[in-house]
Image (cartoon, rainbow, N blue to C red):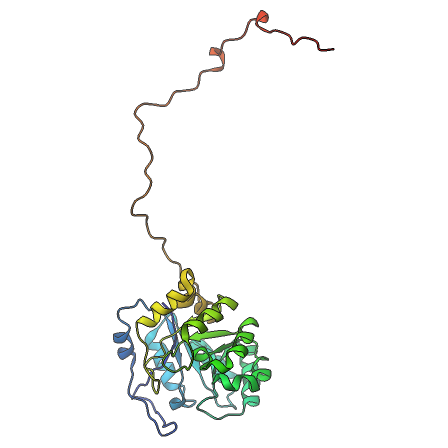
Length: 290
C-alpha cells in the first residue's frame, strides 16, 4: 500500500491556527500505530494549512520515514530555484495549492508551479471544493501535471473533475468523511474515465473531517475497482510521484498440477535401418483415367 495523502503534526515544529482551529498532535509514531494492520510501503506527507510554508517539519519527517516516502509542500511565492532544488533532493515531489482554506493568488501560484515543473518535474496537488472548479478550470488546466484532493469534495464539480481526469489529471481517493457525494459512484465514474487516475490515501489524522479514515474505506475501493485494486492502492501513485514500481511476487498455487508419473521408460524410436523397405511389386500404379 502507498498512502498518497497524510499529515504529520509534530509538536517540535511550529503550527499556526487556521480559521481558529489548531490540530491535535499526530506524529509518525501515531501514524504507524494507526496503520499497523496494513503493509504500508511508502506515502506522501502533505503540508496542511496549519504549517504554512515551513519546511523544517517536512524535512525531518522524510528523513525519519526513509525510502519510498515523498513530500507535498507549500512554498513562499518568492522561493528561489535553489530552494526548490534542495527540497527535491530531500524527497519533495509536488506543490500544494490549498484553495479551500488558504487564500492566495492563483496566477502567481501557477507561475511558480510551472517554474518548479521545469526545474525538477514537480506536479501540483489542489485542495478545492468542486463548486470552484468551473471558475478556475481555465487556469488549473494549464498546469502540466495535476491531482485533485478528496475526490473534488462535492457533486457540483464532478463534470469538471471528470473533464480534467480525461485530460490526464489524477484524483486522491481520500477524505471520504469530508465529501458531500456518493463516494462509490464518484470512484466508479472517475475509474471509468481513466483507470490510472485514482490514488488511495488515508488523509490521517482527518482534522476537521466529519470522520477520519476507516479500514472499511479500503474495502469500498476494492468493491468499486475490482482487479485494479493494486493500481489504486499503490501503483498509480508510485508512477505519479516518480517512484520505482513495486515488484510483487506471484503467489504459489496451493494445488499445482503435477506431471503424470511414468511407469516405464518411453518407447525409443526405431533406427532408420530398422524400418522395412517395401518391395517393388508392392507399388500399384493408379489407373489412367481418360
